[in-house]
Image 1 (tube, helix red, strand yellow):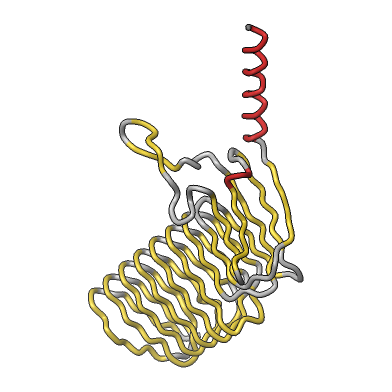
Image 2 (cartoon, one colour):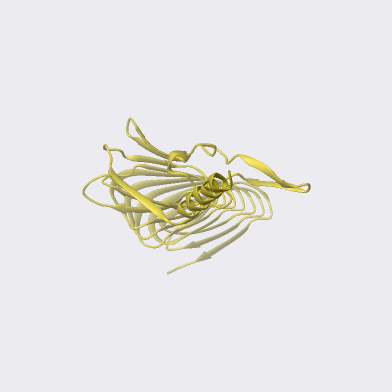
Length: 247
């Protein structure tokens, strides 16, 4: 009886160690041009010649990680965190995510990207998005998103929450921003011609345009504009801080 108990204890220990250690798997994927990443998954996106994904993970069973290409959309999510992560009581005072110890990073290679949707508070880095006529970035939560370079005819950013978004370089002739909450968007190094913005709350928007920047704002956002454009104020309610600086 004692030997059986010792074997069971040993198996439990080994299983726990294996789960805690970083593991990975990689596979090729069908073509997609849209990506949805659900909570608790950090993301590294790279534009390349063939679609693939490499997952590194620890403190979670691989069976709980889902990678699905549905039509032209790649979806990566955990079993109980597709929209928001399921929570459990940690003590008499509060709850935490059932995946609070899990570490998951998805390294995704894509050929084309038209839409990127992020849900949660994870880190997202993108090396470049080139050749897209239209690019839509949709974000829910408090993610930290960095795109090194973007080349597109039109860009639309829709953000809810307290996200931090930065595009370091590139060009998007037409840009539209719809921001709810306390989002911080720094696209001052992304060249644009015409920009429109609808900002609700206390967010911050930094943009660069050569023709026109249209602003609708409710609340107390901060808007910084560089370039040769003129500012066209539409519906403005509250105390927005709008600054214009010529190059």
